Image (tube, rainbow, N blue to C red; front, side, top):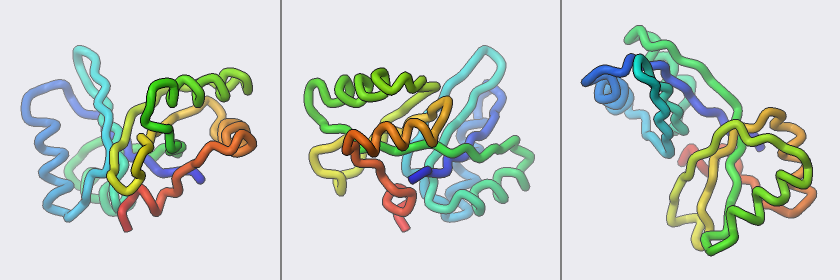
Length: 144
């Protein structure tokens, strides 16, 4: 139920983001979802890709600092209140959301897919599963 996310630390300067995407393209790695958070000096690019290990290897060969993190992907009804309902479930279970970002895929029909990083992934998965929330498998996101 956990999904692997790759995180790349990049200097906040022109061309570095392009270099990451060029490297992945040359390695035939498909970016399925992404989030970029930055500070004045550096950024953290978080990606869901079709081949995590190959992406990590390619980027490390280009001297990027890369990490792999487990996250959870959740189907959220694409309608007013859909996200509020999911967050209410998490709140009732006292689950802290560290960060999240959206993933869009027409195969998920009337749902958005939100990638969540939780303080405690196992507790979050148990809470969401108990409430009937649809958790997306990695194989569905990776596009394999």
